[in-house]
Amino acid sequence: MWVLGLLLAVLLLMKGQESWGACVEVESDTEAVATENFKLGCICCKRRAEVPATASVDWYYMKVPNTSFVQIYSFRDKDITMGPQFDKRLTWKGSENSTDLQDGSIVLHNVTTNDTGHYRCEITRNLTIHSYRIPTYSQKNFTLTVVEKPTRPDASIVSEVMMYVSIIGLQLWLLVEMIYCYGKISAAGAAQRESMAEYIATPPTEKNSEDLLVDE
Ligand SMILES: *[C@@H]1O[C@H](CO)[C@@H](O)[C@H](O)[C@H]1NC(C)=O
Ligand SMILES: *[C@@H]1O[C@H](CO)[C@@H](O)[C@H](O)[C@H]1NC(C)=O
Ligand SMILES: *[C@@H]1O[C@H](CO)[C@@H](O)[C@H](O)[C@H]1NC(C)=O
Ligand SMILES: *[C@@H]1O[C@H](CO)[C@@H](O)[C@H](O)[C@H]1NC(C)=O
Ligand SMILES: *[C@@H]1O[C@H](CO)[C@@H](O)[C@H](O)[C@H]1NC(C)=O
Ligand SMILES: *[C@@H]1O[C@H](CO)[C@@H](O)[C@H](O)[C@H]1NC(C)=O
Image 1 (spheres, rainbow, N blue to C red):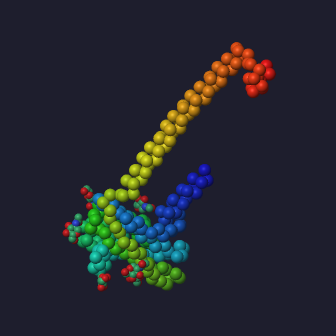
Image 2: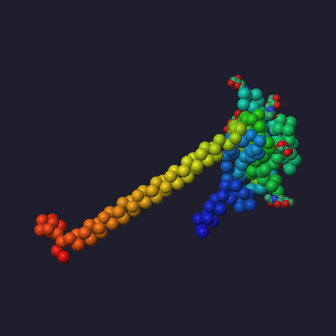
Image 3: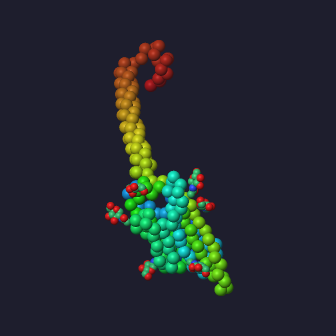
């Protein structure tokens, strides 16, 4: 039971939930599937959780044959500004009900192969310590590749089928072998019983009695 609890706790921590007071910097996935939605992950934890802060998040994108980074999304005081590049396909998926954004993730809807490229997330945070404002800045980079279909699941389906085939095959083989052995054993038993009966019915000659060492 406690193993399950531990697993649950770890899973919740992995989600970087702020309600637990724990923030874990999980790297973004870098492989999206065309036509599906993809979460562009960006978590920048505050080094000192107890210090109040306000933050803003900016996202930048650069196409693969390098051009330059262009701003595609900005979240500032709950105001969202979007560039034209992604045609309103971006939605906020980061921290909610908080001015201190430790999670600045966004979701890219209806991914196309055109969305391949470099993504950069910047979190600008003003820490307030004894009424002093201390600005901090952090950024995350990753390169997104878009695949037409998830490739790994196909391979895993094939290997799963192969596994079942081999398990069933092995069991059938075992069954056949068992039937064969059982047949042999019972045949041998019958033969033995037969020869025994024969032996009892016809008393052995002197030569045989020495060989077989049967006293009765
Ligand atoms: C942080 O402080 C600067 C300078 O005062 C200000 O321009 C900026 O809007 C602040 N950012 C946030 C997210 O509060
Ligand atoms: C793109 O790459 C070329 C050559 O690799 C380089 O000269 C150029 O500065 C790069 N441009 C940007 C915006 O990174
Ligand atoms: C994604 O595609 C579906 C079906 O093509 C469409 O209904 C939906 O509005 C699209 N979503 C966005 C955010 O563009
Ligand atoms: C944020 O606030 C809204 C309404 O004020 C509420 O419905 C929502 O559950 C809150 N979200 C979180 C993560 O607390
Ligand atoms: C991909 O980008 C090119 C050039 O920007 C554009 O012509 C094309 O329509 C785009 N394709 C999709 C599926 O968005
Ligand atoms: C992200 O990319 C920029 C520009 O290419 C670079 O200056 C910066 O060091 C990179 N940051 C990280 C965390 O890799």
